[in-house]
Image 1 (cartoon, rainbow, N blue to C red):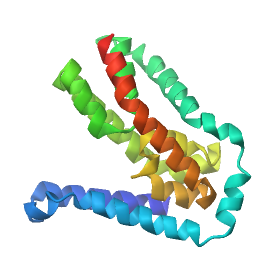
Image 2 (image 1 turned 180 degrees about the horizontal axis):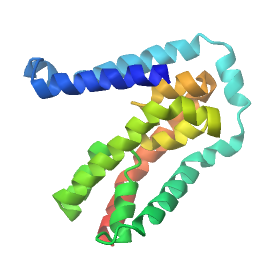
Image 3 (image 1 turned 180 degrees about the vertical axis):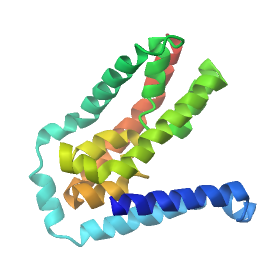
Length: 200
C-alpha cells in the first residue's frame, strides 16, 4: 500500500505542477511523459532480462492466460451492465461505450465526445482515469485478497504502461509478459468496441 501511495503522490504532484503552470510550457509540449515511459519500460526490461528465472517462470504460467483479456472485457461489461440499471438517463449502449475504454481514457474519451457529445466524453474520461488510479492505489490489496492476476484485470488497457510498475511490484516479475500482453490486446480493442457501442 505504501508503494501505491508514493506513486499516487507523484501523480498528484505532477497534476498540481501542471495546474499551477510552474513548469515551462516548452518542456511539457515535447512529450516528456512518453520519453519517461520509454525509460521506465527500458529499465524494467533490463531488470527482467537480468533475472534468469523470469523466462523460466513465464514458461510455467498457465497457457489459459491467453484468454485473460477476453475475461477482463467480459467482467468489465458485466459490471457496467449492473451499474447501468441504476442510471436511468443513460442507455445501456452509452454505458458499455464508457466501460469499453478499459482505462484508455485519452482515446476513448475523444471517440465518445466525437460520437456522443462532450458530456458523455467527460464521463468516459473520469471513469477511465478512476479505473487507472484505483489500480495504482489498491493493487497490493487486490493481490492479497484476489490473487496476482487481479491488478492486471483491474488495470485493463493500462497494464502495458502506467500501471505496469505497480503490477510488477505487487504481482511479481514473472507476470510482466502477461501484463504487457494484456495491455497490448486491450489497447487494440478499445477503438473498435467504443465505436461499435457509440453506433448503437
